[in-house]
Length: 175
Image (cartoon, rainbow, N blue to C red):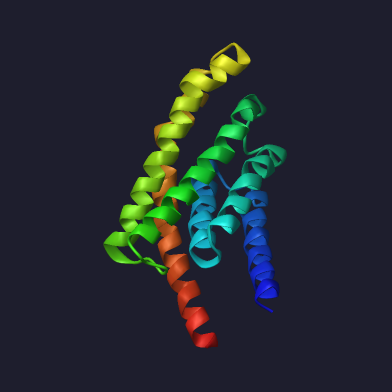
């Protein structure tokens, strides 16, 4: 029974994520919403669910056209960035011994995980992609994969905070 509930909840979040991506909203809206769903998924369903969700979102963004084709070499690094985001978030929560994170503990986890994702993406765009492809990305796209990603993750943490609270209240009412 628990497996069925887990799969149903993960399916619901994946469907919601696809709706966000298909809606065609601008990146400054879509990015924070996707990060919020990563924080929500990791909090309510665990690390493995967050990793699953984070692994397919860049591919869906490429297919949908939200991720420019020139950024296709970044897909493995975006997947890794999402994995780092949910992993650092989850580990920080566990170190602080909080399942339903709130207050300063939540924000510490969000800030640390956003910084880790930003650092990984910035290093990838500066060094790894040029090493692999033999050329740097255009400056505008390179910029989009650096500091704005930190802000997107922080914004996602803010939205995620409210989504987690709503989920928590709904789960409490079911008991």
